Image (cartoon, rainbow, N blue to C red; front, side):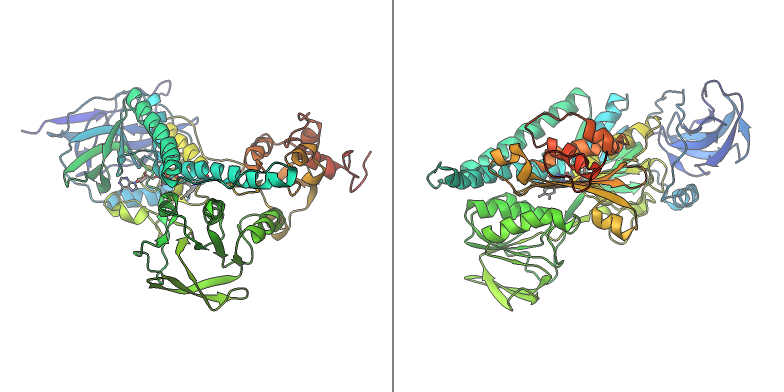
Length: 593
Ligand SMILES: Cc1cc2nc3c(=O)[nH]c(=O)nc-3n(C[C@H](O)[C@H](O)[C@H](O)COP(=O)(O)OP(=O)(O)OC[C@H]3O[C@@H](n4cnc5c(N)ncnc54)[C@H](O)[C@@H]3O)c2cc1C
């Protein structure tokens, strides 16, 4: 016979009687240990009260507006026979007020009640389930484990690390490093040092790149083990608000019950309907990173960061590159004056760059892929050996059966979250590419930490002043804060300091003079609003600007900071001096006392 237990309010610390502002369960609900039962609000904090055990709710003994204290009865529960009624900590850490949220408390309540509650047997039970082991997922899992939670991490691939470590940030940067060495040795001829044309051993090069991936992903597995994070491999789909089914590659299915979940299932490359994607000569970024061969003529569809980085790798290895981009500029998110030096460089290195142009059809032939174009620069058609499609990435939100959990996903597959990374279902969080732009690893990791900390009762929120972007091209382009184009569009008054690297001793000693560091300051407060940098190592340099913005630094803070000489980092100080009119390394554009 089933055992019934009365759930009582656990120790809530120094509070005597606290008001119930939200009830998160209803009679008939099947809940896991740690499922939130209700939300209390005192004058100091709000706190969610978790269930100490799993079972089926028979009756709810309180209502919204009641004032309750430690030991008061909340609900009666018919204990689950399959899930062990493991008691969890009965001290509740207060959680902060939800910040301005996309998903409101009201929609959360509606959604969780409409989600089907199922009586499901579990093979594993955990405090926190993390779906997807990319930078967002493994960060959330590791942080939660460090905060004392029992975590299960679900990943469909054998290697953890997600897109970033396996088929994104890391392999692309390993290949771009090789590419920049190739470019630099070729450029050295102009400085009196000539190297023979290199011999490329593709297998060895691929081995170098794969070795970097293996080192990093192996390290992650070790870290997971040390933290006692369980990794289950297979495709995860929700089967209820507290259960996920994992289908392994051999077809076996496992059910995991959870009190909280973090969805970190990432994104995938966008496919275009008029392109024969099943032809092996049509690549996405994952295929391109595989380096199957070096095509003689390659078309890159999309002049964004990923397309331009891969174009650079293949160009330096010997491919003739054509780029086609719909916008009238490359890397449309950055200011045009920042992308211009890169455009100038690649116009020399590549066969063609068609801006304001698009591909309308691709047909496969034995001797190549025939591509039809439309646009101001492009020919009617041309034939290529390979095509890289790099037109963006789409979130994986529609593949997770989120409706079974009651989580709202939009028509594109994005999941809406608030600043605490909470979805419309209070115990389910989402992070990384799946919650929106910018789709960047450093955004995913920071969001992962926030989700883990909020679940563990810490007062965290994802509220960065800025998230920097970097194109690791040659020259690199990096920007943070507001772009000049955004400031103009928003009618914000700003002052600009732009320092040309042609006046930087460090840049000239590298044989480079095309760089620019541009700093944008508020006219009213002189605070730093945005920075754009183009030139070698721009990606490393932008970090100082990000810190300056996070610390609320102004023009004088930056110009008075002593930067080491000669370095490229000086150029940010010089840009601030240009805006101030105190520069001495150039003629000041305006004079100030
Ligand atoms: C070529 C390329 C270069 C890039 N370079 C950079 C860069 O230099 N810097 C940068 O910041 N960003 C870069 N990015 C973007 C970066 O890789 C992503 O923003 C980042 O990986 C997102 O992390 P995430 O944790 O949200 O998701 P992902 O890394 O996509 O991880 C999601 C994980 O979830 C797993 N998964 C998905 N669905 C399921 C399921 N149903 N069941 C089980 N597992 C599932 C996936 O297999 C994957 O491992 C690059 C991307 C590409 C493609």
